[in-house]
Every structure is written in structure tokens, then in C-alpha cells.
Image (cartoon, rainbow, N blue to C red; front, side, top):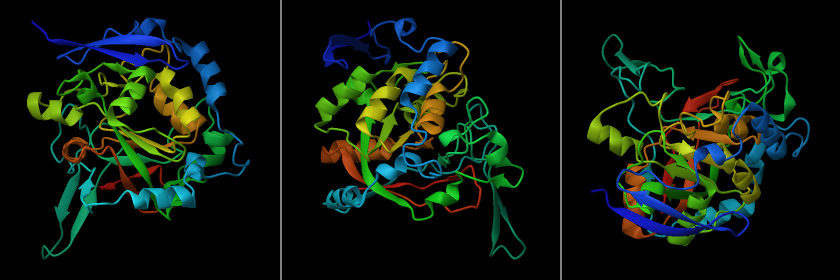
Length: 331
């Protein structure tokens, strides 16, 4: 018989709810079908509600990275106590699998003292960061630029990964939903809602604030280790689109996860990857996909610290739609 845990949490607006979580990682939170956005019309309204277009000027190239101030970087640096450093990158997957349609290629050149790498990193296998030009909605990118003005055969004329050449240093916060639910990992297709994000804040003793980066652990890599690869692009645990206003209200600057962040199926009829679209395109939030958060979760639990200094330094490819990434958490 499946063991279950009752968890009382607060919803946005102060309403209370009870989450019933079992070892399967499923929840008896209110049915997904009752959560807006449920369809393309409601999604469009939400997109307009959370949009940051023009917030930092009509020519802005940074989006929510603007929220990472000098004060925020100093706060992040002050979190380094033990000097323990953890990589968030999963080693490149070189074998084709259900979750890896484009394996990383490593070829040794003549003499075997140099080598060549080849990787198509967007997707569900390789740890990477998305640039703001990566996802469009109604033929527009973040800040309202037209597709033809940005996305060209020569690369992104605006919003490319080269805009992050100075790197990013900010406070990172791990949100470990399997630990909250007392399970090893979430089952594919499991949605995560605002009330669990707030329940995790209470459990971890942290408060997400302006300029922070949040990293959602679903346990994807733990499940893969235990059960093998599966078609993550067709079924994955992740955030439900209804969390977007909460993320904006908290001033979150970066969002990442150990898969591609969106719950799949999306639970929004007619819209694929609604969370990607709301965060990247409406709000201008760079996303960190396929991060390996297992070592981070273990270190955070050992130290009983869920906040840390997060450091990112993608190679500034001119007009790049993102880049493979080795993000570092330092405690």
C-alpha cells in the first residue's frame, strides 16, 4: 500500500490547501483542469498580464537579469561560508536514447592532442542556458521584437547569448519538490503549483526575492538512473503555467530545472511549453534546462542550506540562441 503524507500549505492570497503526497510523487492538489490557463485564450491573457515588454526600455536586451543588482551580487557572495562548490552540469550524453535524440559528439583529431566537439544542445538531454531569442510567441520575441528583426540565418540579431558575456552571479535557491513530498523523484507528467513552492520556502527557511535564481528539482536524473531513459519530451514533471504571476511578483531573475521546466503534457490546451513561453518571451527570464541537481540536493541536505552563490558564464557566441553550461553553486 502506498504511504501518504498530508501537508498543509498556503496558497497565494492566503487560502489554505492540503496536499496529499504518496511515494509515487503524485498529489491530490486541486485538479489540473481547474487551473487557469486552461486553453489558448486564457494563456494569451496570462501572457499579457505577466509581460515585461518595455519595463527596462524598448531596446532592452537583458530582461529579468536587470533585477540582479550590485547589492544582489554582494548578497550572493556573502553566502559562501564553507567554500564547497557543486557543478550543476550533467556530463554530456554521447549515446542516443529516448531523451537524447542528438548525442554529444567528441572526435579526436590527428595526433590525438586536439579534439572536436559537436552538440545540438537544445532539447531534453544536455545542460544548457536558453537565450531570450530562443522562443517566440505570435512571431515576436521578448520585448516585442518581430521574428524577422531577430531570428535570421546568421543568428539572433537581438537577445543572443552574447548579451550575457559579463556572466551572472546571484543568489540561487534549490526547490526540492521530491524532498517536500518525501519521495525519491516525481513521476513524469506531475505538475508543480504555487502552493508547493511556498510550502518549500517554509520547509527550507528561505524567502525567494528579487534577483534570485530558482532551481526546480523533480528528480529526473535519479529516476533515469533507477529506471532508464524515457521520452522526456512527451512526459515530464515540471511547473504548471499558473505559477508565472508568482514568479513575476517575486522578481525571480533566472529559472532552471533538471528537465525542461514545463510539465508535459502542458495541461493548457493548444499550447506547447507554456512555461517556457511565459518566462522567456513574456518576462525575459533566461532558463537553465537539464541541470543535474542530484549532487546539489545532496550537498544542500547535508549542510541544511538551500541557498548559495550561483555562477554562470556562457561563452558569448554572437547571436547564439543559448549555450551548453556548467553552472556552479558555492556554499
